[in-house]
Length: 170
Image (cartoon, helix red, strand yellow):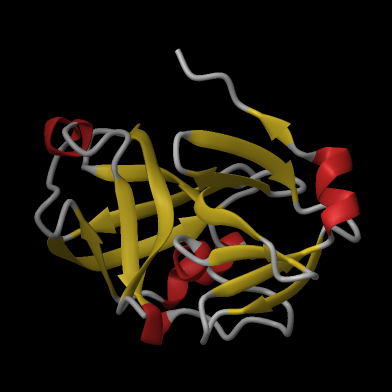
């Protein structure tokens, strides 16, 4: 498993002193305060302060002294050390741990592998097999088992057929 996980996305600079407004990808936005350092574009930044409100979180980072420096980070992923991340409840997983997992039906038929997960109220999984791509929600009854250790996700074949949408390739 990777030592870092994506915890946020930089939305924009906040103010003139280099603070960043970020969209957290954690279950509880306030959990971003647990991280003492973050990584953006592979570069380590010490977290000087972190605060949250109902819409976003705000980070002040060492080395990001003004609005111009913060603007350069717009749209970037913010990673944190897995060791600093809060423990997950049973049945919850970090997206980075699911990417690349093989997807099979309960009968053992391979459907492909997870290429991406789009965070939403009900996460949308992107499944690729060869040149085909499918999207399906993590709706009730679709995902039967997740085995991160063995890199395998088991789906209900019937529910998958009901909810999956094949994506057109240009």
